[in-house]
Length: 607
Image (tube, rainbow, N blue to C red; front, side, top):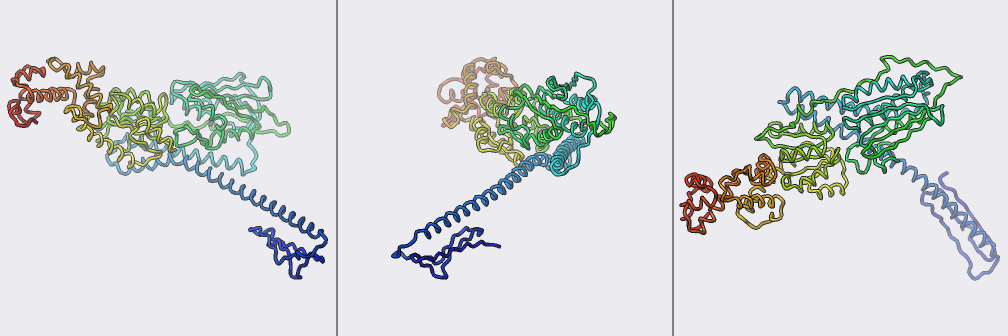
């Protein structure tokens, strides 16, 4: 019945209602309208007020019923909206988890298809990275299925009876091999050799596997991870399992959310979240009637503690768990220790004509993908995985451009960018920041640090390639402007620029040593407290000349001023410039200006 109608007919001698008059209340109609059809009151009559009271009560009850119905409808709509929002939020987070692996897989697949001259080693490296990212997607799908099965099936847990110490030791042995491949020492300690209990091997395996995988993932080479097993001192019928690492640790504000599905720290630069693993782990622990908690200090490591009951079901005997080779977990594939040697340059060759790009990225697969974008014939990629190493390599080799991630070990990308731009030696180098932090504030913060460009992950190959080429072209155009500003002493927009200040400082030193015939690029480098190689690269990118040529340029510029304004012999002018071989001075002067010193002196308007 679509509508509920309530009728009220009131007849008194003071209230006249035509027979057709009725009060109509449509309660369930979506518009909730209260229609009063043909209602009239004889204002001149005076009668019993009871009718008014009855009418007022009826109207009050009707309004209350309407408000209640409206509130229930609103509550129902809110629940539906929250459900839709939750679904959309989960789907959005799942999309983010898939995006980075898919970007790498599709990008490397495209490079394999298009680059016909790839070496066998490079092809193998690309294929291994694709396989690694495919495995990441497979693990994600499997965990999603595990989560679904926990909520949608009533299948009983597969229990076994056995020595839980031996079971955990078996898992430890498998992961210790993988940990050693990463340069991490994994240790197992148990107070007892045997703890006989009922346990769920599949669930306990997934719990420990997730905790150990996270511990290895967030630990540095050279650190330790400890697995500790003991009975609870307070409740002997419980066992306590701890996984303690010396890794990055977890921020205090992130700890309350660490077991949330797809939780991602607001300060994280990773495109992906912490995923499903910890959420699944917590639910598995709770199914086993246990508890899990975490303690962590940022920069010092984390400690996950799992408490599980020691139980024996007297009414039902479970199969006895016996360790065998089939119980062992598959060992993850060994990471390529020769990553740098195969794809990247650690020590660039002097006078390498290729453009040098310093790539600072702690995700190896993203580094491989980035390397694949740039042709080996045109670009020499110098790779490092942390900010401190990046700054050292930048100071040592003065690359043509720097591409950096934001979140890295030891020194983040923003601090790296800031130090490069504040360094007189490195300030000319363009810096491109690549980040998964996509908020407008993150973009502004990157630009404030001096970044020349800010690219959001995941990025397209064409996007970063075109950007790098444009930045390099812009730097080449600036060379001539810097040269005119300093050598010709022109006033311009670069007077307060860090590069112009550096060039003026260099030029001032050359002018101070103008008459010194033994002054060389080596002594200039000593004055600046840098190596000759660094000086040559710095001057090359800012003026287009190596140090020795730039010194000569300054000397000849000074010689032209003397020839144009003073009546001195060619020999005297050469001596003023620290050159005592007049013939050599004349040859160099003509080579640089196109005329001899004598011809230049006779010109009506000196060049």
